[in-house]
Amino acid sequence: MKRVTIKQLESVRAVAEAGTIVKAADKLNVTPAALTSRIQLLEEDAGIALFERANGRLRLTVAGEEVVGAAHRLERVLSDLDVALGAMRGFHSGRISVGIVSTAKYIAPRLVAAFARRNPRIEVAVSVGNRSEMVSQLRDHKIDVCLMGRPPADFPVESVTIGEHPQVIVAEPDHPLARRRNIDKAELAKENFIIREEGSGTRAVFDYFFSDVPVRHPTVNIEIGSNETIKQAVMAGLGLALLSAHTIEAEIASGRLIILDVAGLPLLRHWFIVRRADRTPSALAQAMWDFSLVEAPKLMPKINGV
Image 1 (cartoon, helix red, strand yellow):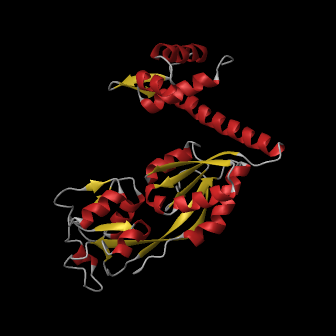
Image 2 (cartoon, rainbow, N blue to C red; image 1 turned 135 degrees about the vertical axis):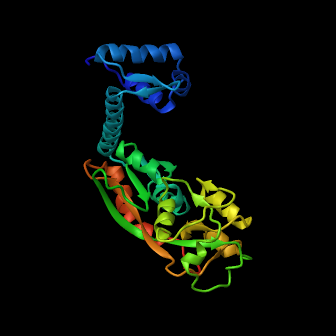
Image 3 (cartoon, rainbow, N blue to C red; image 1 turned 135 degrees about the horizontal axis):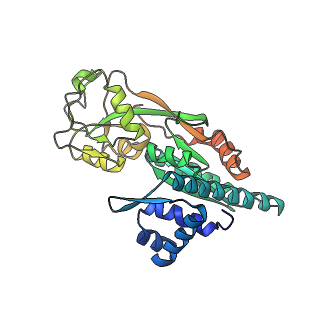
């Protein structure tokens, strides 16, 4: 593949992410015909198909997945080169990418903002998603570091604890259980719950905590991918929710939500900063890592009742 270009690699990755030539072309600001030509030339040079059509969408073949992986690796190499050249010029500038699980978005902005104030010439690109999405980005080398509650175990990573991460059950202030003490979870399981979607760390904690008792799913069948929407549903009286205490700081302070006194809770997990163990971090990524280890514990919210 002597004629492969960066634009061709970017094109394959864009189509893989968008699923169609038209959407990918719009994202890259080129015509669909030009994008199709780029990919066809690359396939001819490689001597193998990179995409197959399935259910009206273009899906990567095994060869296509290899090309996308190479595109990600090349992006990281070019980023590291930019950092190295910047260091040679005598200043620290460049770009790092930080992944944040959605629950951590209530604490991570404080950390990113503090880092940005100290390093104004470094651009920090933040990607937010549930745990499965962030693990995928870490696996594909799309992010330098990630803040999450449970590091992945299916590929090599380095992880360090940066703070406690308590999980609690919340209710509206007028809920019948609001003034009860030491509530047994078997009794609690009879209540309606608003739950996070499959793939989220919070959902995994919910399933673990109630694994030894039958849990009735909400009568309104609410499974939500947003902590904000879950909090609104609880405040509206639609049920209870198990959430990270760090997501409810404002609501507890204002009295819009309360933390139930449940036997076995809070369930203490931990926040971790995570990175690939099989890749040498750039100087900027290392700077973010070192800063997080020192400053993140100082920025953790203090929640009454936890």
